[in-house]
Length: 389
Image 1: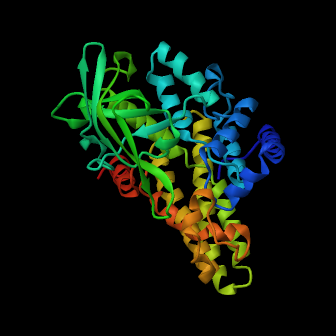
Image 2: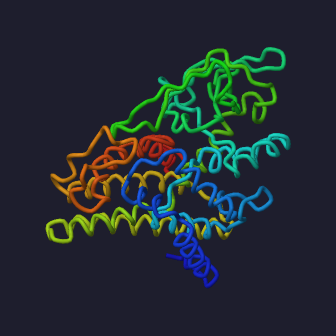
Image 3: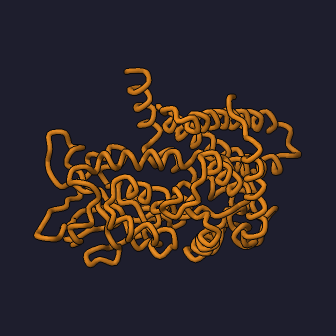
């Protein structure tokens, strides 16, 4: 590995650890570590704490209100936050739409939206997937037509994560029919309280309401709410997806689950080889991530690293949650579905509090190899871009 933390990085890590120790509320830490459901109020409480510290948008430059951290500092913060049990913020504005506006937005769009993303006044969702357009996103059928000074949008989006917690959505819609279907797509910014929008809940395999189906029936928005030129949406979407795939690079959550698995299986030596195997995979993944950080820090161009990290990170996370559930055995099976919205787990607890969330967390993590472009699609991108197949 050609990457090492220098003295400044190590000092920054200690600063982050001290902040998390003193500023992360105990109830939020316990909910996260124990895989309990977090409400919108829970997430936004931590958002406000980070905003007060100036750390709510780790990947934003200082000129837009971010901390101006290096890629290494951002990685350290994400890593330590995951290991400490800090809630994950709603990232569709801070981690995705914000960087898009910095790259493609008008001065007016930046001035209006970016400060409100930072403060939490505006919480965002992502309107990409449709019933017939998931990994093949260019097949989307939601349409936008220009009528005078307004765009009129009609269609359906699905798997819209946290739309019920958001008040804005960035959305891809078709604005023209081109021979190459990617060329007729545009990128829009839409308030979710606009007439004609209906949000219906989708409950996932674990029983929780995280995603939604969202219907757009002649939704009218100002002409200025398009980002970039009409037809530029595909280019913008690819820029955004690179941010999304790299967003899973920190391994704090993985390491927390590994530590819990070791504790559960401490008296079961038959699990030792399997734990060692997944830990070796985790360390290998970490080496890849740190080498990628070294390239970014040296301003070297990246190739398929984001795709590789997305594939491997989700695979290791799924293996960890599966192994943790197997180690817990029969005690992983019963949990109270009726209490999911207020917190996962058996009533009363069978063992350690975090053990109550093992089964639903395993079920929940079945999705991670699908979102941000399925792992099969990532393999195709690598095959085409790296191997020339």
